[in-house]
Image 1 (cartoon, one colour):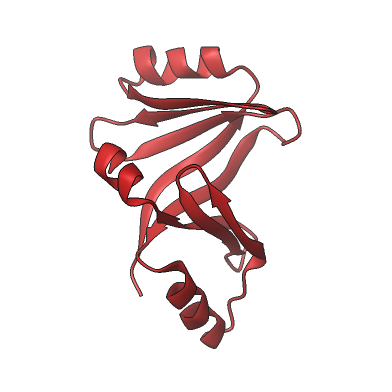
Image 2 (spheres, helix red, strand yellow; image 1 turned 30 degrees about the horizontal axis):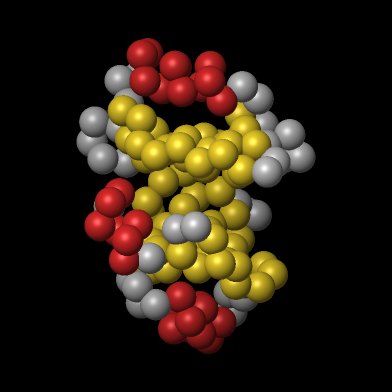
Length: 125
């Protein structure tokens, strides 16, 4: 089982202002942007390679939403985690970047396990 941290997801009130802050103040570069029926997502990449996923979505509380990871095989990862007493929250969901499911650490912090598509990996990883 290989799980690597890919980004942290932050829920923001005003996506445009957040993009300006991460770009102009912190020196991040803009990755991709996706408009969604409920809001929008912009990935901001730090000079060191780590990313922050900014999501404007009024149905979520502002702040840290989850830690996003990359896994090689989501089904195998889930089975290995279950054998250690860690169970997914909800069902596997298919998204524009791959397949994902959430787990929680002992403190209740959400961790998103994502099996990214090959197309996504080639473009953004």
